[in-house]
Amino acid sequence: MNSKLYIGNLSFNTTEDGIRQAFGAHGDITDIYVAMDRETGRPRGFAFVTFSKAEEAQAAIEALNGSDLDGRSLKVNEAKPRE
Image (cartoon, rainbow, N blue to C red; front, side, top):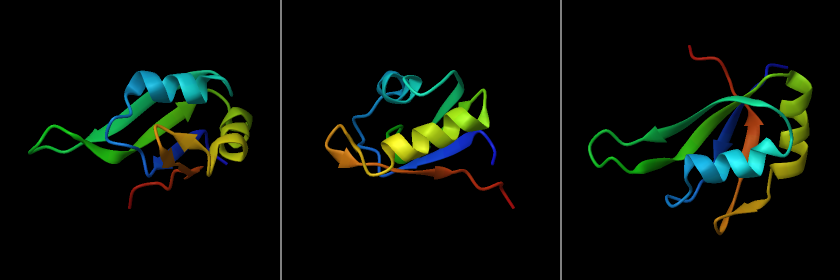
C-alpha cells in the first residue's frame, strides 16, 4: 500500500486546515492537495492526503472512511496512480 489517500465527497466548505485537523490525528501528513475548479475557483469536492508512512494512511482509512466531515460522509481510500 502507498501512503497517498483519495478523499471523496468533501463539502465545498471544507478547507485544507479542516482536512489537516481530521487526518492529522492518524499520522504525520506530508502533503494535502484540494482539487479546485479552474473556472470558478471553488473546490471540486475531493482531495489527496499523503502520509509519511503507509501504516498511518491505513489507520486513517479505517478510522475516517464513512465518517462525517462538514456534514458530508467521506469516502477515503488508497489513491490510484495516474494512467
